[in-house]
Image (cartoon, rainbow, N blue to C red; front, top):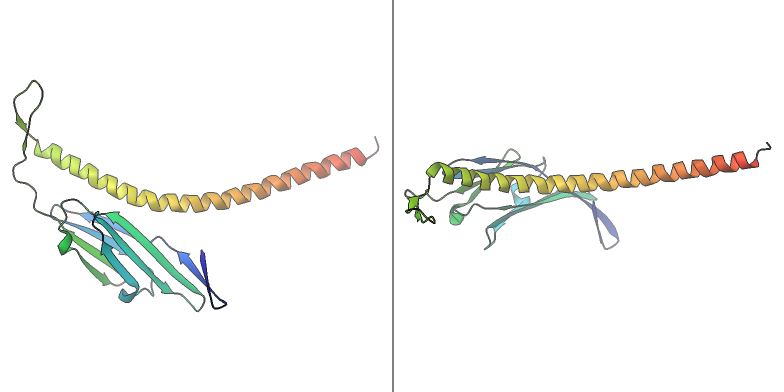
Length: 183
């Protein structure tokens, strides 16, 4: 939770991680971002940089002193037509549609040592693309999981310190009790 103090007023921000799902097809990728109720189209900002990173930023007030906000970044596929990326916000779900360039009909030939030139096996090429897409999705999900686990770890760490302190205090009190009692 972040705090912003302007002119003596305190405003709290909850950082959220909206659920997202990829739908990947041969000619198009669609990112679905499920956003909390109350968020409107005007609260969203979508941009892509020169490195091919798509950034979605959003936030909205919950009440007078509290707001929610989020930021989602994902790498766009290399064969994506960046100028044709479109977004649609409907019933709390943001759909980001990313059309792909048509797949190369004939793969270039590859020269192997000790062999004649061969063409790439299209199935192997497709498998490699699927692995790349999977890894992109994995890192996207892993980033949010890492964030949640870090928060959980901090809370559990503080709880563990409190438990250890209570245990040490209990041992000290027990020692004092037994040392003070006559034998």
